[in-house]
Length: 195
Image (cartoon, rainbow, N blue to C red; front, top):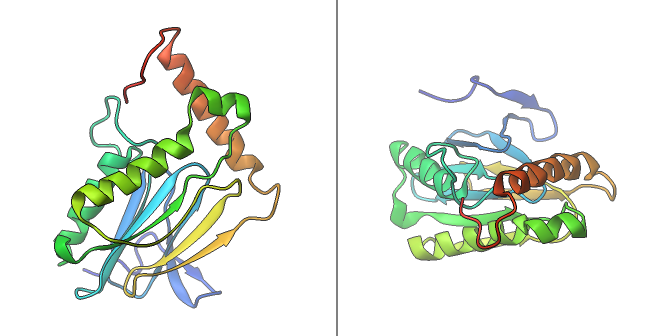
């Protein structure tokens, strides 16, 4: 069954239906649609099978899980969930091509000392793809500005649009609150943080 019409809104700029995904979500399709997301320190990985002409995009917040084994907010889950979903749609793991986006520094210097979320996310994405033997065709990671990503799953093409300076305030606020919750959960102990 086609995904067109389910959870999609019209995108007049591209003249195609669009599916927006937020943190902890993923979506895949072979239809002529757009999958979009807005990234700060989070990462989005697009996977595309050029033979089956299907692709998908995820959006994760942290590299590994702390307890919620099925949540796509963790990179390890987000990658496996997306891979499995694409394979159900006829993709072959050996043909996957990847593109990686996000990992911007949205936190203040003091917050970044507690958790360097962007670096953790960027490192995880590239290490995972290398271990799985999935080639990375392009990437746009790091920096200080939020990115809006538009992924075209049937073709594998991606358009990245940087937000204007100062537009990342809302993204930074959400990520700062999230970093503080992580720090509170960590407590006063010293040592590595396991997620």
